[in-house]
Length: 226
Length: 141
Image 1 (cartoon, chains in turn green, red):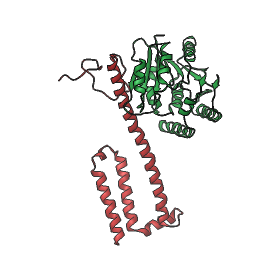
Image 2: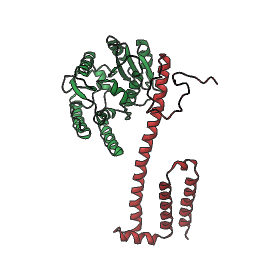
Image 3: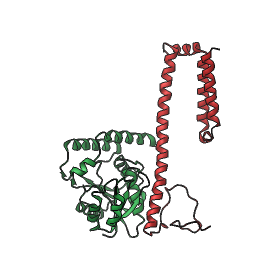
Image 4: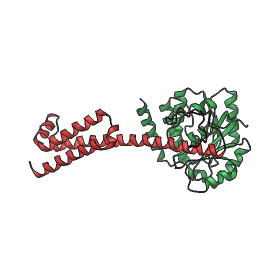
């Protein structure tokens, strides 16, 4: 799959990023890692593993890192399809491949992973409840029906890569992407994916209080635009 | 005029001239400047004639003039906080665009990828390059 680029935002993932890159390289040579101002050895690990390193000079947040990665990836010659993939090893490569197939077969612009259509391995109960609440909120504010609003695994085509503009720097970007799907009229579908909640990924996951941030920022964006 | 009035009026007038003289004031819209001017005038009037403030307070159903001033102050503070928050968001967005540009250009150079077919629409307004390329060019001059 030489026409596929994986975009991986990286913030202090030196422990696992090498393994994640190796797994992706079995599928495509185009692994774009955006090092978002990590304070550990992430950048060195990315270079060592042979992925593209795009280095943010300052920490800007995961949404900003995704946008940077997409803007770099769309300049890679021959790349027509894109996958966003988490650096902490909670996503499964096979899911990404299936999503790319769905993208092609279904004649879609973007395919989103949903852990509620699929299996969540070892998800903490509180996290599950919070995520469901987030989905409700997102469905109401964006007008798009999804079962999982905050899944980092997405596959999309060049049209989306060329037109998407994520402005929310932090974790709010997941809601913003859904709003962009609505606004730009992308053809979308959700497919079930498996999320591996390892002790490592749970400890790196979003704190519950962050949900408040996301809700407030989403509402402010609505007000700011109208 | 009692001492506190002198002090307050002096302070507000000083602040007013300081604000108008600052170089950054050029970018502020005329309506905001007018609003600021009006606000300063009101403050000076309020300081000089507390009885007038009390009358206005009674008119709108507030007991004391000081209470009215307090309520208005609360509104002004809220306005300021929201305005400041939005401004901070804007400047952060600009900073992020700049940093992203640096990160992407640096990576393109590292991997020897040409950026000539890049769409620059959302990038900061740039002077068009006479040679039609923007990748890794350095000023020879």
